[in-house]
Length: 83
Image 1 (cartoon, rainbow, N blue to C red):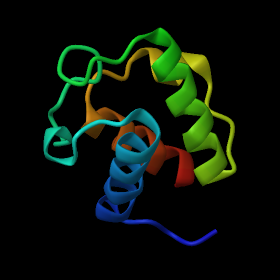
Image 2 (image 1 turned 90 degrees about the vertical axis):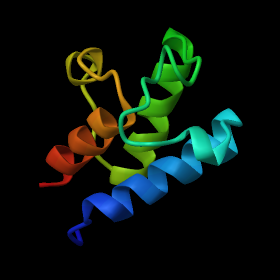
Image 3 (image 1 turned 135 degrees about the vertical axis):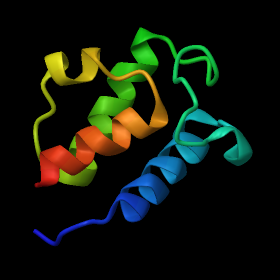
């Protein structure tokens, strides 16, 4: 599998958040908190994990996702998954 840069992962994540979760593009910044800033709930988090599994073709363990709070946390988690 090709190596993805953080910018590429961030851009894919941004596309997912805009298209699937109807979040305004200008709200999606690395330090945005998914739950406080982007109004995510636990179901949204599961949906995002599923979308990221489709993107990476890798299983994301729920334990990995429990620690995720910000957009940047998601980017780092995906980066580690692809490493």
